[in-house]
Image (cartoon, rainbow, N blue to C red; front, side):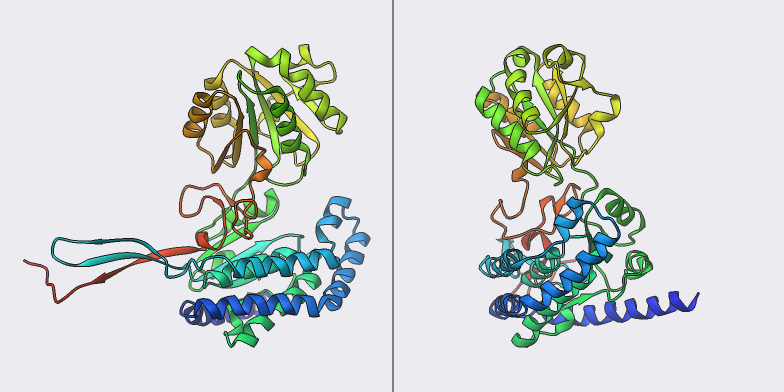
Length: 425
């Protein structure tokens, strides 16, 4: 092992050990302690706004020198409005019901044993994320709310900004008398630290949550030796049923695709029932094209929309994260559901339909984390679900699914109360 590798191993091991100790104490902190720490962290963000902005300016200058795209620079940039949004977000999380200690189920057995299933923290959570420094506050806050210790690892381009925010979160813990090791940050930009976290910290880290682009999440899922909560891609669909209202179809598709093209809930494919394609597509595609969206369609679409270009086989399984949409005409709801099952990523799908029976069939049959009726896929967001914030959208079938908020960062244990019962032989 090289000297650098030894240094990283020692540094990361120290983080893990400290996090495990802190997690044990956090799990028994009162609701008011954790909520007070969140409110104190919000106050620290506001009072140290100038320090955060100075750190962000250093990150922005370095990012511009590296030639990062305008979209990446926008994700990285902080201002007074975004800092206030972080602080307000922490206060909103503090107002949420406490997920820890919640009685999920309770029953009594014939022998008099009373059994409860009670929500408990997961333990130590490793969160690996990319350019958005505000994730530092959101992720730390959700872990604190749910009684978990967290080890944060932000993107190298946002290192200074994230560290300044992290210090505010730690200040909130200190003011409230909570072990500050409940929130820790990997203190190096070295990518090898991520590798060590994923492969060699199972003794201390209970679960890893990645938040970022496809390459990051793919690496985490391939290298992690602990459970992972996350999604690889957001190939989201909007299906226009034969009963779709024309104005709803146009407005929802436009919003689902173009409100923000770079988020995981952005629609990438529109499926249109053949029975109404000639009626719906011209208006829908005009709205998209006027907004600057490129249309890639199958042969049936090309006959209706002159501006469309031919779609390839790869288009149906591509997450564009850009002003591009693929459109296919399908023969009925079964064909739409089959297309989603074949090409979808299990993230978010929407049906536009006036006929309730069709909507019910779609919502019941489509096996994705989030399914919607007559609504934009861009509602796939923890804040929009009333969760205060989210760490990400989970598309797996084990543990969390959909927006991952404070409640999804808990597990449960069984508490059994008796009066001296013994099990008969």
